[in-house]
Image (cartoon, rainbow, N blue to C red; front, top):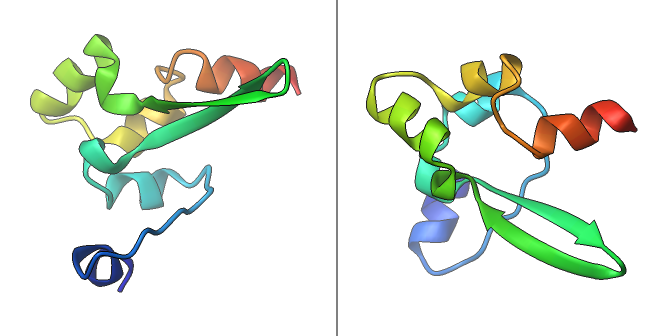
Length: 80
């Protein structure tokens, strides 16, 4: 359903830590937003060469999240 909304030109933002949800979303659609000094920055997960190579090799993003390979995202989440 979310994909069909996006296909019709809508934007869909979902915040999750669910590996199953991440596994169902194409890598090119995954981003994380970090806030530093009052400014938000959107970072494409696909820009991480390690994650991209792993996904091209057959890994799923949710499994990589569980393994702590989303550098910066996981580290910040663990600090909170």
